[in-house]
Length: 345
Image 1: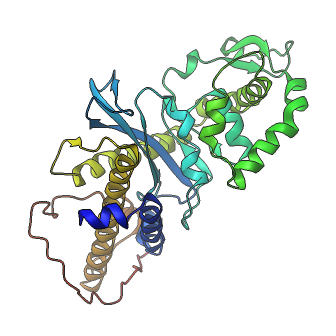
Image 2 (image 1 turned 180 degrees about the vertical axis):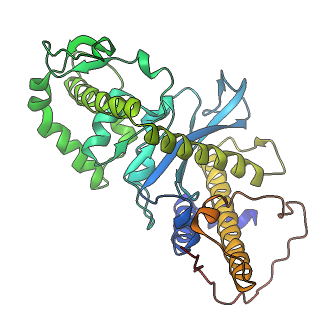
């Protein structure tokens, strides 16, 4: 197994296997009652590493050395993309990579996250990529809200806004360059994280940074106005982020045998994250298949099942799985998979 892993398995092949699992999972009818395929959430969790390697850093919040496994999880519970990043990096730099590199049938256009999943340049780039960034922001009232013009005055919410106004001329001047960046990302010539790392400094020579920041200020101000005025939107964002955090716990439960990633090579560390991502997705697929069969059996016995009842379930179930049991490698004919279950409306 070690020889096969070293010579035959690559991160690209693991991502292809993950994509195949996601596409098969997407055929089930049950996840349609759990969430919206057009929404996804991003969140990271620390994985312990040996202190003496290039990626390992000490995380202030977790209080140990390691790296951050960064996951993009669909609103239907399945994980779409995974990455392994340093602890000290601002997670918003990598938040758009998960959607641009996602090749599965589930293609979200709305992305949720936490406070570290946003910044003004990220809002601007996401807007040009057709991605609606809607994070759960801590202390959102302390962020700067910008007026469309300096003389604009609001009756009830005027105190939320600063005296600064949007520089529309700056956006118009650099809009062709910003669109060219977005087109390059769409064409796969460059990743969003590469651009956002370049846009991370407010140097006077970095004119494109100021243009993306100005556009991002517009988009973020509009989102914050939606956020404070729509209670249902806040509930949707909270629920999506809870699902992503639930996947973090589920994925770490599926990783056993060691509390530390014992590889010091960056590529091998990423492969471990991808392996774990694949195993977690396969368990989610298995749970969804088993739950579909159980629902059909209950319906055959005369029980009335409704979409509201199905929406209360989750595929993050672990009590039936034996991590330390006997694993037999043998060929088995599992037969066709029944993806459908019909509920009484």
